[in-house]
Image 1 (spheres, rainbow, N blue to C red):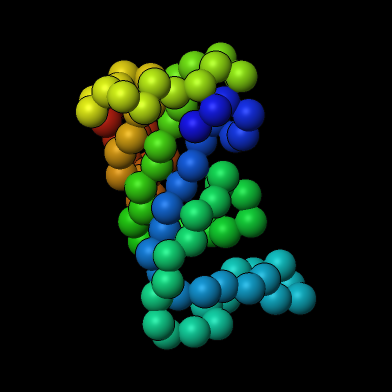
Image 2 (cartoon, rainbow, N blue to C red):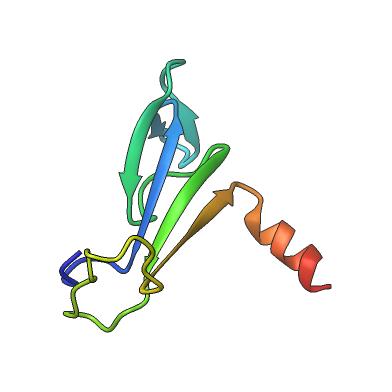
Length: 89
């Protein structure tokens, strides 16, 4: 919120994962849990939400507004790149 962290934040609700010896991502449980990440280290497995801060580093978000264009948000899925490609074509 104060502009010192990563500009993007992802929230996933999915089973926990680990990377095996071959570098493949495997689910290690059946019960989903919430994961908050900057996009590194956790592979999306389904749908998630994203929040993107649209301010320069070090500039805090105005928390007094109910709707603030300083933060974009939306839904992302594991095939978002394919969907974006289809829309653009």
